[in-house]
Amino acid sequence: MANILIVGPHPDDQELGMGGTAIRLAQQGHDVLLLDMTNGEPTPLGSPEQRKKEWTAAAEIMGVRRRLLGLPNRSVTHTIEARHTVAGVIREHQADVVFVPYEQDAHPDHRATTRIVEDARFDAKLTKTNLPGDPCYPKWLFYYYATHLRWVADPSFCLDITEQMDLKEASIKAYETQFVLSEKNRRVVEWVREFNGYMGSRIGVRYAEPFFTKEPLGLSSLDGVLI
Image 1 (spheres, helix red, strand yellow):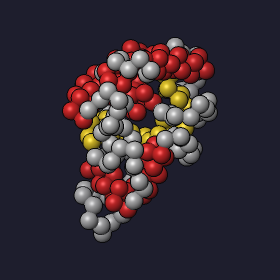
Image 2 (image 1 turned 120 degrees about the vertical axis):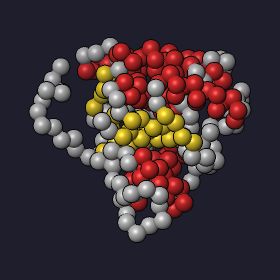
Image 3 (image 1 turned 30 degrees about the horizontal axis):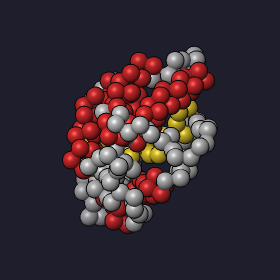
Image 4 (image 1 turned 180 degrees about the vertical axis):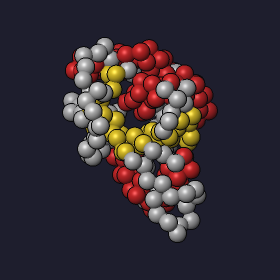
């Protein structure tokens, strides 16, 4: 089994972008940790207390663990301190695989988060540092799509989440202040299902989530890719 770290700029980004995959990985027995860079507040209808209830409920639905880093929402900045803090989480979790938002995005927090984690992956392997835990270099860094751009994803691969789609939607709706009470954002839940349905159609399944990788995937056979 693998140690999986899924980093999101705000609570709900992981659920929206790859909630089905997180659920599937947890169901398969992997140790899945969600790391929220910020608490996502302020928002029009939310509060720090309510948002915590929502992200806790979402994690319970998904069957994963969750941790808040505590950087300021709307002003996440790529700094040495932020890099080393995330590197410490990588080392403590001994992450084998790390997921981050796709690097092209209209939201500055998303772009900064991805840059921080990319560099923290390198920092986590260094010896003779004050970072907690043992040196660790995650084998894989994958990008998920939770973008604010009106842009069509061009993924390297898609993962079947047909059996997890309903739980993914439930985890999104756990954020009541964001996607249930907000009339403006209710459509997002439908859009996510439609998007995952389209991605599923590209690989011959009902629902799928897309991912991008800069590093080539190594295969020992074609068994896992032939549909």
